[in-house]
Length: 134
Image 1 (cartoon, one colour):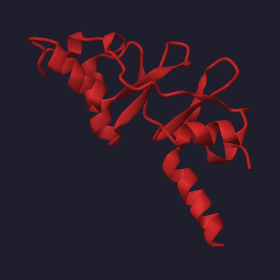
Image 2 (cartoon, helix red, strand yellow):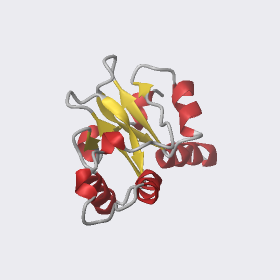
Image 3 (cartoon, rainbow, N blue to C red):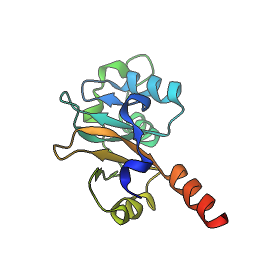
């Protein structure tokens, strides 16, 4: 069993780009029903993760910010309260499991940090539950 076995591929994952704004982020989170979403740079490399809470804290900390003008705020300017670590596709399974213990999902990257997809903690738990019960 390796990391690839758990990979939820990029083409099935919602994500933002570093050129996205706060309004786009909120709309995308609502559409995909995620509580956090990966951010990729213009080359497709993993940049970080934006959480719903990051948007709320930004609104609270920014006088005059509202739903009407949030399109003016680039997501790269929003402080990320959680640091979601990524794992290399060739890493040991133990490395991924250690991250999954603290994160709902683990972004997976290649040797150039290009985003390949995510591993969802839900899928890991389901896999181990199936195999323990067998």
